Amino acid sequence: AQTVTQSQPEMSVQEAETVTLSCTYDTSENNYYLFWYKQPPSRQMILVIRQEAYKQQNATENRFSVNFQKAAKSFSLKISDSQLGDTAMYFCAFIPLVSSGDKLTFGTGTRLAVRP
Amino acid sequence: DTGVSQDPRHKITKRGQNVTFRCDPISEHNRLYWYRQTLGQGPEFLTYFQNEAQLEKSRLLSDRFSAERPKGSFSTLEIQRTEQGDSAMYLCASSFFPYEQYFGPGTRLTVT
Image 1 (cartoon, each protein chain N blue to C red):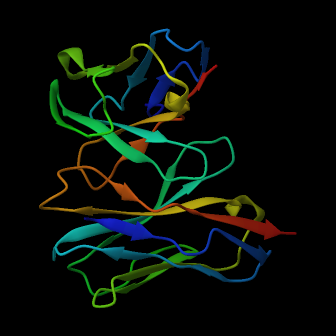
Image 2: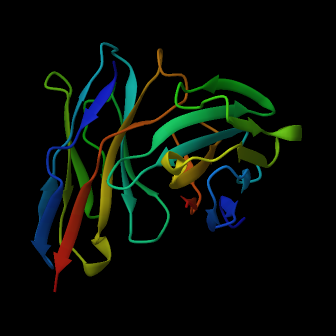
Image 3: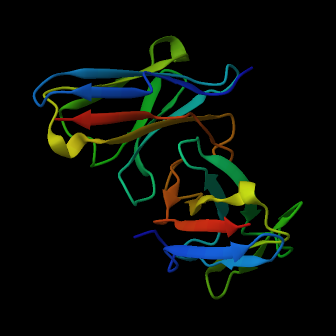
């Protein structure tokens, strides 16, 4: 079964500091996409960053970057210079390209609070 | 284009009633997905369409659930004979590529 595990239900960070959210996943496939989605309180899910498994280089989007360790099946999200607007639920997700069709498999989420 | 829209945003219904939700995808997107999110959990896949064809359904989608996407545009998700366990946020997403899904704001269903 394809699974995603986020072991940190809640995290807190001081504004302007750096925080890392953890994610591990399980798949027997070699080709897949990994994602981090952000869900602010009472607002819709937004794609933060995407990583293709065949790319060794870690994806970055402004203050957001990932540490992709394919052998360890680990995909952590680093948020630099945290801002109050980063307060949200963060979901790790992936799509194995062969077996899952088009559906995303999500983890249970990490609730991040940015303290002023 | 204003993104994926869903209607209604909130629905309160009594157990046993039927409800229908609508999703309007981003106009050029041929793929449309329905997910369900319960409190404290990540979204779970329910079903997906490519154009008007429903290509996959989750085992979560019991016989009381039906989804349609006539003409490959908007989609509806109907739940018949609602149960309290159906209370959840129902999310719609659309995409042109499967690895770039854009989500709507969701419909929060409460079954009393």
